[in-house]
Length: 183
Image (cartoon, rainbow, N blue to C red; front, side, top):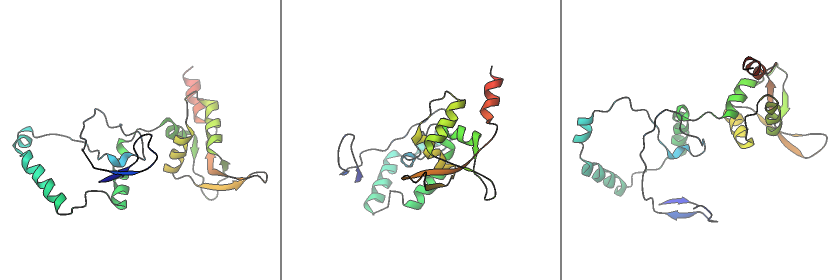
């Protein structure tokens, strides 16, 4: 049994696990959702011995799987295994435009360096000056987290607290060089 919420349903319910999925793809960049990647176990096949594969009895494979299931074998991932899966599947992640621009135009400040405190929206607005690429706040937030930027809560002008990132702009913006070389 697995628990999930069906599209448009209000509640999480238990459902019988009906199928597993196997596929092949061309290229290595195919995982687009870093939060949903634990459903996939990507690996690269360098060669296949067809004759040996044909000799495997699928009846025996299914019998072994059924015996493991009946014996109480834990077939789901624990938290440590999920963390390992995320690390191992990073090579198969599509790098978003937000991540590329973040890595190109900003850096994490060291303790002795000056830095700016910027919201995700302010970072996107700054990048928007240099690119017409449509950028998404959610993906930028994920990129900031993945890149290890520190998120802190600050009050501005005595107002409500907002989340900002300690970030250092690379100046002049490297995108200026790209734009001028393409003209």
